[in-house]
Length: 285
Ligand SMILES: [Fe+2]
Image (cartoon, rainbow, N blue to C red):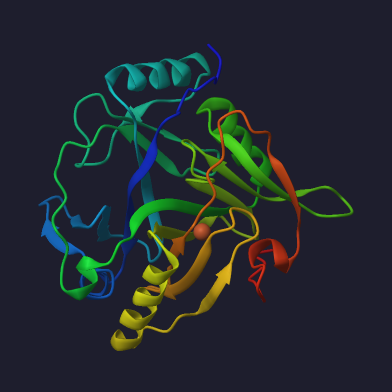
């Protein structure tokens, strides 16, 4: 079996964050991100709203318990599972209550859990003023001490397509890779860093005006925009970043590139401009 169109098309459906302070996190995602909370009875709170879902449960602060990708249908799941088995990748029971039968999970080389499945619950309509704002959960980024190994897992085992690579100019060492599982430039990315951790997750809006509206909303809430407004080089999306009560970076984005399946990966220099064409950037390493 090849990786040809293996995970394609899929999309990030939800992530599960862990926290030592679940009530504050739930409140922030309700009020600042416009999500409605529902206790699921297994320790997790399901936060859902306009095209965005996440789970929050007790555990280490800023932990990423899993990332959940929705695939096309049962045949798609069967192909992905066969690929995992063919490559000797251990298959685990899906940990998410939001996917139906046939879902399963694998772990990347850093131990991050990726679950693949088909959603079987209807999201709520959102909460409060922010519940009206557009923002579809779109990508998750993890930091890693061994980015090349991580990138190989996502591309060679699951079939993600590399959209853009960021490299050190002199050594050529990879410092970041943005990978897609449908035409959107990235649904997951890996950044080289001194530790393995969640870097951020992102909600894609429909336009620059939505970024304005989110900015005004965050201002009313006294949530500080900690980075941006700016435009990423890789992916060319407009962005702002805020932080939840645990300090997790949360991105609002617009205009992310569409990249055809066949397009070869681009290369960017490891410099601030690659992460922000308009100004300063956080270089994770
Ligand atoms: Fe991002």
